[in-house]
Each structure stands twice: as structure tokens, then as C-alpha cells.
Image 1 (cartoon, rainbow, N blue to C red):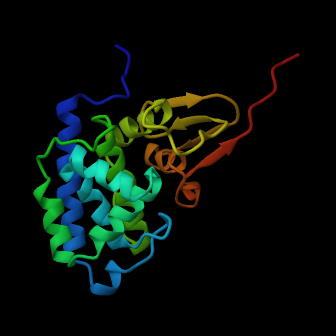
Image 2: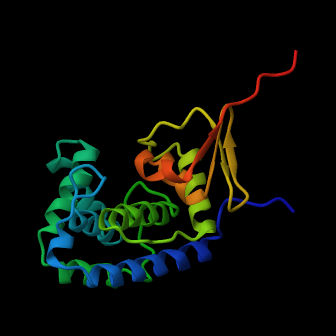
Length: 213
């Protein structure tokens, strides 16, 4: 039987719940200075990334429309500004909001059921890497998220695909063609989502051999 890269809906949501709960536990133990730590996600601090992860499951179409208009129709600005405003609240409230959405199946308007897992895995790494913490990704979950990025058509993928063949070394997953990039699927996911500095130390590159004459 062929191995599928896509998780079943129930398994995906179970992992989402586990990721939300474990991230809330990590955040609860941070010092005030750690909450202000800059991340590799633009100008967001740890608190901004954490606040962003609470918004999708609490949003409504009315709220999204209001914020979209407030951002003058700029989706990226809307995502940025809503997170920064939510992050201004006490950190205990951000943690409580993250815990409160464990079990939620609500999606942000215009997204699919695969986005919550992708968002949690990648932004969970943004937080962990900024703090120098180890936060392992479940390989099956990372494969599901990497496949979502590779096949993403809507919402539009904000990151260009590497012009290479990506090969996971810890699970059955490969996509693309050309020179080969090999590594754990979690590192490939970070590469696919525009975080090469975090991914590269765990990746190896092999030039494609020219075809025999």
C-alpha cells in the first residue's frame, strides 16, 4: 500500500490539540524577558507569535472583515497587526487563550483544515529557536504540513518552492526535481516556509549527476 503524506482529519486535530497544550506549557514557564525575545518571524517577538496562534480559532467572518478593512485590504498587514494588538495583553491571558482553544475545530476564514497544524509546527519552532529550546516535531505531522506547503494553491503560498528535490531522511516523503536536499522532514518544512537559517544546519545538498551520454 502506498504511503500517504496526508493525515486523517481526526489524527491531525489530535496533534493540533497536543501542540497547543504543550506550547501553552512552554509559554507559561517563560520569564518576562523571554516573552520579549525577538524571533526570526519578521519583527514579531515571542509574545506576538504566541498571540497570533490564538487568533484563528477565535475569529469570525465579521471580525476578519473588520480587521481586513482596518488593514486597508492588505492581508499580510492584517495578520501582523492583529497579532501585535493581541500580544499587548498580559501574558497569562495569552496562555489562557491558547489553552482555551484546545479541542476547537474552528478555522480562520479562507483557510483549510490543514492550516492549524502547519501554523503551530512552524511558529512553535519560531518560538523555541528564539529561546534556544528544543521542540521536536512529530515526523508524521511535519510531513503533512510540508506536503500542504508543497501543494498549496489557496490560500496563496507566500514562500517560493526550492528548485531542488527534497528528500526526508526520517520518513517516507520526497518532492521536486533537480539537485537533492536531504534531511529530517522538520528541517525541510522550515526550508519550505522561508526559514533557511534554521533548516540548513540539518540539511545536506547533493548535486544531480548529469545523465550518461
